[in-house]
Amino acid sequence: MKTILVAIACMFAICGSGMVSASETIVDETISLDMDYYWSSSALYYAGDILEVTVKTDGAPVDVFLMNAQDFDEYEDMQNDQSGADGFNYYVDGSALKVVKKRYTFEIPETNTYYIVVDNTIQPEGGADPRRSVNVHVAITGEEAPGFGAILAFVGLLTAMMYISRRRK
Image (cartoon, rainbow, N blue to C red; front, side, top):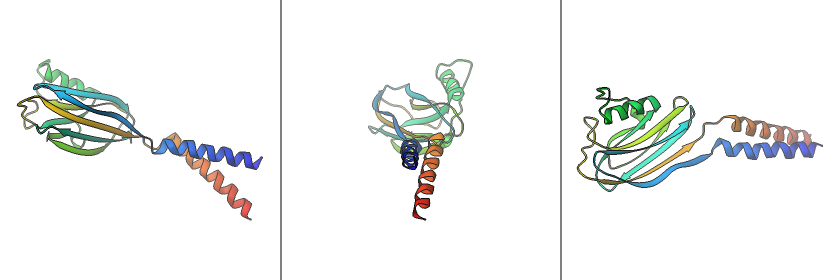
């Protein structure tokens, strides 16, 4: 019976530990962006998730923005000249202006749908000045915040360690 319990505890530890450090490729593609256009990718992320974003262009600078769903709506309104919008909000730590090559990580502050936008438009002021179409390679990976899987792994390992230490006595 104890052997079965140890086997189950080890299974929980093995299955759970995969959840702790699960790194997932969300986007890994090269896009061609005409002048005055943008590209976006969105996904639901949870508080504490870590995004790693890599952007590399063919030499022409672009702007990269990380926005939540509400901010992205404002961004689209501005791009479409709706509602008189002349600005938008974005996460400064998850964004960069005038990018030719950039790699950064960002910890998601709260559970929400987030957008990564590669922008080849004249907006915002102070950003990249688009003069031509640009090829951009975008890679986004995400790492889950430790959650239930981490708890399961911890319980499984703790149970296995307690059993092994009791057998030695």
